[in-house]
Amino acid sequence: MNDFITYLEETIPEKDSLKLVKTEAQKFYHSNSLEECLQTGYTLWEKANFQLQEVGVLLLGYCAHQYPDALSFLRETVSRHKSWKVQEILAMAFDNHCKIVGYEQALPLIQEWINDDNANVRRAVSEGLRIWTNRPFFRENPRIAVELLAARREDGSEYVRKSAGNALRDISRRHPELILEELRRWNLSSKKVRQVYQLAGKFVMQNS
Image (tube, rainbow, N blue to C red; front, side):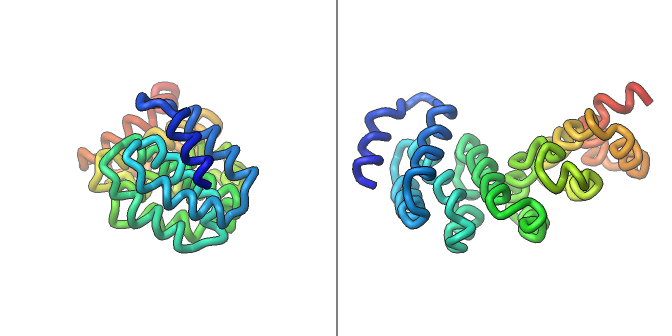
C-alpha cells in the first residue's frame, strides 16, 4: 500500500487528471484484495491532494459491496467534501458499486440515496448512473428510471434538478415516447418544475 501511495504522489500531478485517477484506481482494484482497497482508500482520503482523495473514493466504491462501512463513508463523509470534482468521483464510485452488485439488486439502495437529505448524495445517483438506460436492468426497465428521475423535478437543489433533467433528456433519445408521456403529466406552475421540463424535453418537445 505504501509503495502505491508513494507512486501516486510522484505520478499524479496537481492539475486535474481524471483519466489518470480512474486508471490508477482500476488497476489497483484489479490487482489487490478488497481489504487492501479498503485500507488504501481510507488512507488516500486523508491526503491533501484532491486527486489522491479521488483515487481513494473510487477504491472505497469498488469494495463497498464487501464492506458496508465503506458505503456509509461515501454517503456520510465523502458527500460533504466541498470540491465539486470530488462529488463527480462520488457519483462514479456509486455507479461502480451498483454495477458490481447488479443494478436490479441495488435498486433499494438507489431509491434510498436518491431521496437522501444531502443534495450531493441525491446527485451521486442521478449523475452517476447516466446514461441510465445504458445500464443493465434500466435498459429493460426504462420506465423505472424515468419515474426515479422525474420524482426529483421539484428538488430543493438546482444542482440535483439539472442532473435529473439532463438524465431524462439522455433517456429521451432512445425512449422519446416515455419522456413525452411523463412530461405531459407535469404541473408547470412551479419554476423548479419548468426548469427540469425544459432540460428533459429539449429533444422531444420540439418534435412533438
